[in-house]
Image (cartoon, rainbow, N blue to C red; front, side, top):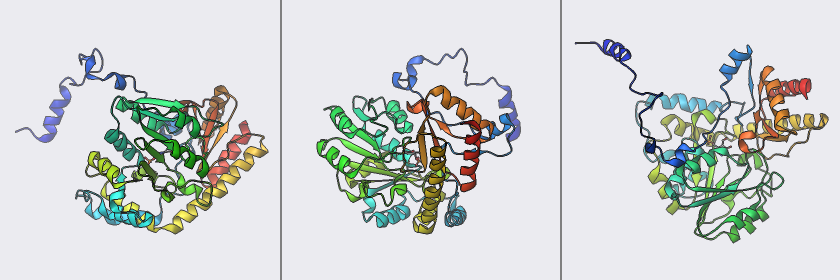
Length: 387
Ligand SMILES: Cc1ncc(COP(=O)(O)O)c(C=O)c1O
């Protein structure tokens, strides 16, 4: 009898069953909205750029990650959880949901968890949106949301930003009988701006109860101490769902862990459509350890405040305009798409990645993430050589 390896070798000799050219796959297999879908374009992997540009070091300030790295306590919890990685995770993720419920003084049934907050966003869209439903949000916000709505085939209505801020009055005015969901990102990626408590309170009074308000607060930790920030967990509206993440302030983007908070009736449906064993064992253990490590969170916020000051002070010295930020990144209107492209290229050649914002509909802007002090310094030095 042929060995496994021999069988593999034989398979490798047979013509590839998945044809790409001259495909006979019937076109109607793909729904129109999927055919039209513009996929999310991540930045190019650092190792490709390093090879291409012959660099031995690369500084990644393009993706709003946290350069401090994941807390030590989280790394230890992951190593411990590895002993159980041959088991499926506890379906329902109760241990982590209990700690989150305790943290926010809500019931476990008010908490959803997922492999990144984007996964919960996908579950919310899957659970509540039909093809004829309308979604209202802003231009110039998180691209992942646009991709998910478009992949559901629902109608996406985008209201222009007002001076790089969410225009809540215009968003409320855009709501119709067909609107099922409004997405607000506060603070907003990529502008770094917030809307205030007064703006939110006036907005929510205008929104009918049958409209779901999805409040994406991926960067809320960076607003701690900002009294005008309308922390959604200090309100109680039955039609508001909050999304938060461990990817930013907790430095855990690669482990993929986020959570959602809201009325148990709504959260029940989000959990119903979720893949049963997500997030994985290691991520769940990591989340519990992170929530208990408030020292790390403090350190992360201090690093961010200091780095933000260092970078924006330099912008001022260079006479560059920037949009004051409540996050771990800052957006700079830089004149034109051509100027942004030249700066991006010039920084890349010096081993520093920033994010040009053409894909966000802001082609004249770029965004830079706060890094470690030495990374911020390298960005500043590289910038001085070009700007
Ligand atoms: C506004 C916003 N929401 C959601 C996400 C996704 O976060 P996660 O890593 O939890 O999926 C991001 C990531 O950049 C983001 O900027």
